[in-house]
Image 1 (cartoon, rainbow, N blue to C red):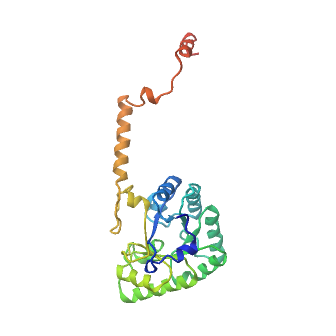
Image 2 (image 1 turned 180 degrees about the vertical axis):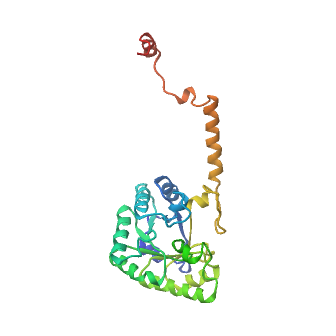
Image 3 (image 1 turned 90 degrees about the horizontal axis):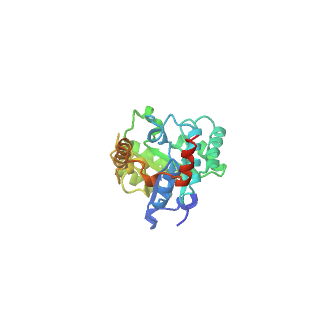
Length: 282
């Protein structure tokens, strides 16, 4: 159906008869092509890059330079998807001016919109980004950039008071002009309340089935990394196991001399080989 624009995303509500949005992360050109050819609506260049690609234990180590580098790689694949780039930790916390500059860098790298974490306290930054004609996607609930303040990767809004605050945060983000809001790590009933309370789509990850869309990390749904599997992840493949088997088979063939074969090698004509032999290979 072609690339979704931010205004089109903002109108995608399941209650209005729209199909749920499909969002998948990608961090390079091959991944972006796979996500696009599979028919996803949105490709998220997530700061999860830090954990699933760069080997860190959390998302806090990734930089704007990192995000621009990988956003550009995704954009060069020209996926038939809307490209959202995460603003990493401390790229939108210091000043509105710095926030807009960092958002602009991600857009120049190839993003169609940016995503940042947090509720009402992010409104001044969101206002400035949107005033610069840059579409914004919100992210509330479990916000990985706040894991130290939250005490780890824990489900949020389990108490009624916190759930009400989450609904109010979503309303504030929608009123500010966000085109969508990601709900991460919240009870399904709370996600349903938020979804019903706002006119922009909610995109869930660990938030149950009543959101207007879902997002999963590429490496999680494909089984590329099996070190930790969150409860909300469904594995649709076991790419790590297949890959380990393939590399092991290659290693065995190299050691046995079975690779490369005659057909996998380049060859010189017999005449040229004879002439080369006459000169002793000199």
